[in-house]
Length: 238
Image (cartoon, rainbow, N blue to C red; front, side, top):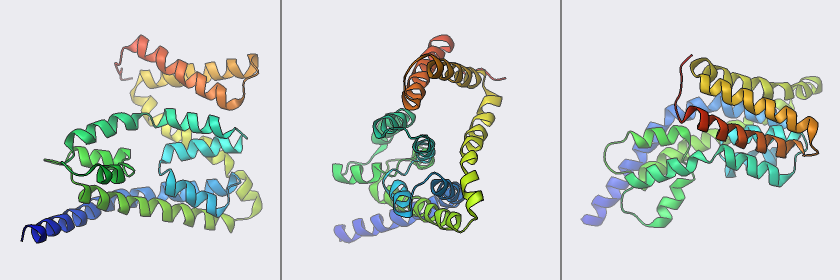
């Protein structure tokens, strides 16, 4: 009876996770669709586009990777840049670990792949312990949405006229501006960080022989350190 009860609870938690993930899955659709469109214009093929969404599953990192790929940046610099962007996952995973139920480590390793900003938020507000069945149900739902609409975006992009496919590259820069502006409007810290990083990147680009990838990495790291020293972790509203 104990085994049957445990299986029923596991199945119930899985369904609950799938249900909770539905809103995130819907929210991922346009973002993943856009990624597929831009991946096509950046020179990736369908297999590469789907593989990136399948194995990376990180929106901001995938968009940054597209920008660097389009600029001809080397693989090591792309990996390092996306690592810096996603370093916050170390803190999120540590927080999730504190709330995790006492389960085999392989189960925790399995659902750790599905930790994103959105799934972390849902998990963090859950009462009590976090179970693998819930996280896997949640994760599979949103991951499937991300991968599927990345493929759909690529396929639709393939059907666009070549002149439109080539011009889609500009959308990458518009996307990052769109991400930055809402945060910058609320925080002087964000404005300062973006400005310092941009200035440093320009200086490094025109005064050193470093590649574009390394100038981005160094300017990002230096700007982040300077801002944290100056603001001491405070966020000042504009």
